[in-house]
Image (cartoon, rainbow, N blue to C red; front, side, top):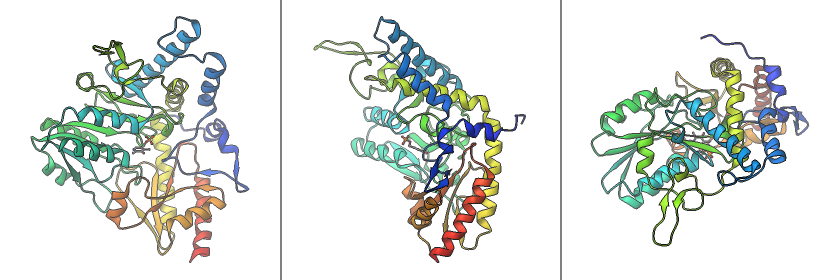
Length: 408
Ligand SMILES: *Cc1c(COP(=O)(O)O)cnc(C)c1O
């Protein structure tokens, strides 16, 4: 791999929030798996939109509307290029991962029949479980579950045995938000395709670390949220192969998604607009494009290599503390460390770390089946980004030792 080493101090100066204090301490932000921070380059794009060319898109003849439409469609193009989609209209801009998954789940309610089978992994975020359970209730389809292992990986042998001619869809996250495990999506896709099943990959957690190439991986549907990769909240994307998206009915009715409306019969717009009813998050979409530009300028190879160093350092330091148990030790992981300290509730650790300016997440991380598997109520999760440093990890370790001393 060739890449430039990251200039972390310069990168950190791009993020205004990293300058602030929390509870009288410099902020150490380790909740990147829940949402990432936003650089000035992206904030500036949002401010520029509202101060220079705020207007509704796709409909206006006036200049502002055309400028806004051009910028929004330019962002769609950036998303297409980033994920290497074959066609621009295979990129649907949505309000985020959850919205994207619901578009697909809702569409399949008109396609599936009783007895069809869907396969989901134990390791999913609730947003990649619940829509499918609702779909099964509606259609009589059956949800099968890929089990996980103690190491925090998917049980691929059992996955093989779940696939058969009735399997219609498989859903797996590219990276687990609770454990950081990078799942073998290439194998999963190849195997699912041998029985004719389509695969939806939840890329919400992978997107800030790994650039997925949807054509090379032969991905059927890929979904993600901008706010996990330095973009704003409330915007994300759904990639789908053209022939698959064409088969699905619209998700919502309204403006923008129609070709013609009469009371006798309404016809729907072509892709991507069929799935984009109503005024979208225009500033958000444009900023999503800017966030991809920002991260690509730094480079995903450099980001991955640096985050691996942070992960290795954090893992080694945590393991050296007595009573710490780490959940999820797959060979291939992103920089997420989920852990507990024997005899202490994760919430108590999170609260004390916050008093020392350190933001970690505690709880089930919207992935209760994983917590059930390990028979724990939740974990403390420290998730790192390329703007974090080893020094910040060392600060967390000191703070953690102090909280353990206070709580034991
Ligand atoms: C964050 C996340 C989601 C949910 O994303 P939203 O932006 O809340 O819709 C889904 N799956 C994974 C793996 C995530 O990390």
